[in-house]
Amino acid sequence: MTATGTATIRVRLFARYAELVGRAEAAVSVSLPATVGDVVRRLRDEVPAARALPERPLAAVNLRQVKLDARVEDGDEVALLPPIAGG
Amino acid sequence: MMSYVTRDCLSVERLLAEVSAPERGGTCVFLGTVRNGSEGPGVTAIEYSAYEEMVEAEFGRLLADAGRRWPEARIAVRHRLGVIPSGEASIAIAAAAPHRAEAFEACRFVIEEVKRRIPVWKKELRVDGTETWVDPSGHPTARPHA
Image (tube, one colour):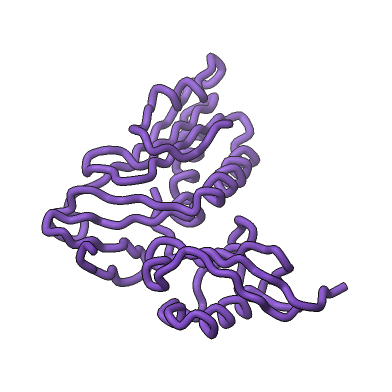
């Protein structure tokens, strides 16, 4: 069954993305069903500086990398990840 | 609880102690070290930052994947975060297995997967006060110190 209603998503930003937006965290509300891509669009609508982010960033939900069509649920943590440069 | 990240200097001896055993005759160690001047002169240090909760979770999944491919191997890994001067190590991996082939393969697998999966970012700090996010997939963005 698909969840309906409104979900509050915690969005976290890291490294260059946090610098571009001027913050490391935001909360956005989306109508369910919703995807990570919907969360990115909502963030770009609600936080003007977030328009500096790419439209299709690398993303994770609840500590796992996902594609932008992955579903989100109320209480999820979505992270937008700049290109990984570890090691 | 054991963590895969640290802000201290990396200790190869500590990693070796975690993987060594008499039945494992081959051990491979990889150290990734901060270079100076990868994109030009004057890099004095690299500042590493991370999504630390995901780094811990993803390293757990990565080592589980390695464990399925090389069941007899034991692997230990640490990633250092914070400002690391050039010449010092940012990541250390030790892989021990009954024979050298598995040790080399497992160690190589882990560093390649780190580059692909572990959410860590680095910013080059330069002598002239500029800093640059390292973007392996695109163009670096220079900006002055605030």
